Image 1 (cartoon, helix red, strand yellow):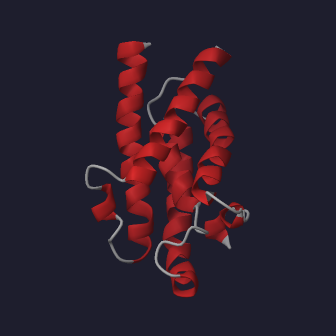
Image 2 (cartoon, rainbow, N blue to C red):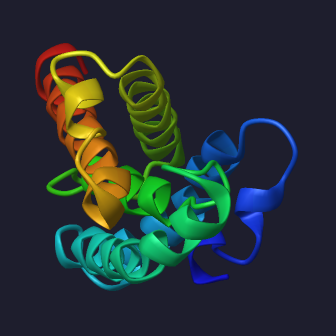
Length: 150
């Protein structure tokens, strides 16, 4: 099942959190070796398409926005790191990636600022869009932290 991303969606307890965590090494490597913008963007597009193509079938079998479909978490987590500078300092990178992970999970779980309403969109778009918007909110907060606090 493509939407479960190598069956991460079937891990017991908190599959969305496990998926977001599993996406971080991919995002880091894509940022470092492809490009800080195009690497995460490429991953966001790939996992968004995976979600849109697989979500309707998964929803028919498992119900609306099933926890087993985690490709949307991969897409949303990648959105967080668009435009985020990656440096050679592992301390900086670790702080940025941990902060981005925590921010994304907070927005994805709590669904503030209209994210919950977006999730009610029908089909694959409803599965995907709440994570994309959560990623955008988390990215804005992360950019604030990087450029104002750090």
